[in-house]
Image (cartoon, rainbow, N blue to C red; front, side):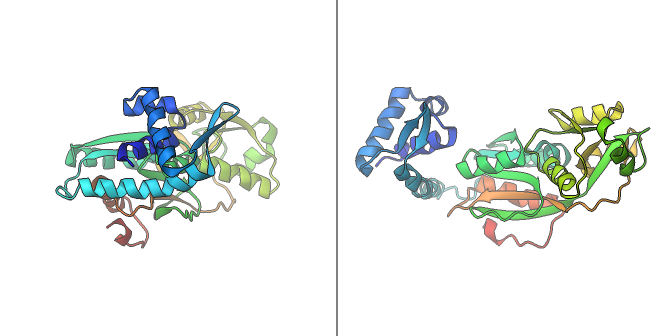
Length: 301
């Protein structure tokens, strides 16, 4: 059984297609097919099948995933024995836009300056998508803003509670009750579906029998802030993303009597027998840089 065949298998699982795996690994599609056929012959069964033209894992393929991950992690560790303390390679991090612009930028600058031999790849997605990408192996570290989080397949570090605020234009209402009174004429300006704090706010409305507001869904926090500044409506955002605008008088925080559940920044790393020095160094820097709760660091080492 060749390591490259397992790498091909893992890449197909991560990307979801033979064509995508071939592109990422620099192989022809026929080579990818040959790798999988060789694995299937050795294992004694099919690893993938097609359902309505979509590639799906067979039960045998699903069973192989954790075994392949362990073997490839061990292989990486063996390759790194001689330079075990050298921080290099590729580090793939997924984070929501709110954390990227408010907390991660200085951390990434420090990390890439300190470890120039690491190729740092950052992707932005919803918190839900970031966790999916972590579990599937598309990224090494996922950061997210969520209420409580208890992942089974990840090492978890709760970083800091994020203060959430209702914001409107500088000439907007002083109290959220004013918006509720004009509910059918008020626009809630927010992120895409799947955003954790949008979901939390909308569930709060349902739970407390508050009729839903008209919703305008925008592609970025900056677009949301600019639209709110124009006076079109209000939004519900982490305070750290609007702090400067509030202090400069461009946005106004809306008083309210609501009791929203606390929400936190989290860092997740998939459980593995061995973490690369690049992942360890990034995790330690995040923990050092973001005010944290009382979790210890033992799992990193």
